[in-house]
Image (tube, rainbow over all chains, first blue to last red; front, side):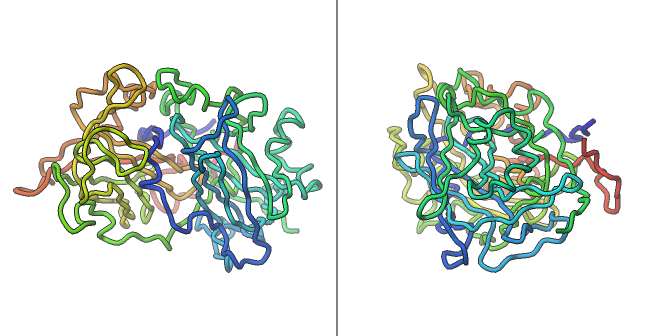
Length: 192
Length: 246
């Protein structure tokens, strides 16, 4: 049983096409300092159901630091900053649907009695034509052992579904394309 | 490796109809942009119950006054938009960032893609930022945005609105929405407003005129509270009731 809201929730609405007016941060793409040890570019494209570029989207990221801790007072172990790591970023998509976030690999995150979660980054995706955000997760191709026992990846029905969440290694970091719809549709999550 | 049994909160599940569906054909742009597969339930674990504090992005007072960001005052009806950010347990959400953006008095956005034939206002950018105070309160000074046409259907017009973006305390609480104005005659034909299935939830996006906080000879006041998901805990300090993790 989950408790119900006592006060009615404010509904979501689309960001619309003019989101960059309100949501631009000059340093938004940097979840980590450009000089951070182990820093890399997470790059990808946001694509619609026809394989077309979503050129007016926004990707936001949130992740643990390399020790698997969060710079948030909501972390029950005690929030604390990690030098050079912000943990969050936001990136607009360009004419080709491309986005890029500079970050570091998060550490494994404890998962209570279930053990630990493989290194991962939570993403929110916003765009015109999306009445609510969608949520997905980035995992890393070079963490096969941790991914194999990750409790969230194990919730997914097939290897093909899991594969949509695994970022591939590139020369400058990792690649993670997001397919909103279609045969290659990315796995999205509901936070119920 | 230390394995912790973490006492994590669980943010309440939005009731059916509280949020719009991603698949809503009346809003044409949704057609190719909604996932076809059922989303997987993601347990709310550490990454989901934490979130950025954004203390390094503290806005200035001027950021919350959209009428004083240029050399002159913008055209239009000066208004105050104020309210509280709460969670669904009724608890204020203090020190959280709000970002707002809007069209000018003629319904035109300061954006390269906006081709609506209505003049730009050199004294209006349409961007505001504020942090809630210790009681979850915020206040913007701005002008009332105009309605504008769009191409969703024949003679489609967006009701006047202000976009709001909020983080809350946790990734799970992140919300982007739009605030509307009472008595707008355009609601009936707007698929974005009407995409919210629950009519009572829809009404929560309509601000209320506040005569008491209207400043004589200066500006009309509108109240708009934003309610983010809470943890179902009682709104008092010191309650250590373990959350249901099922």
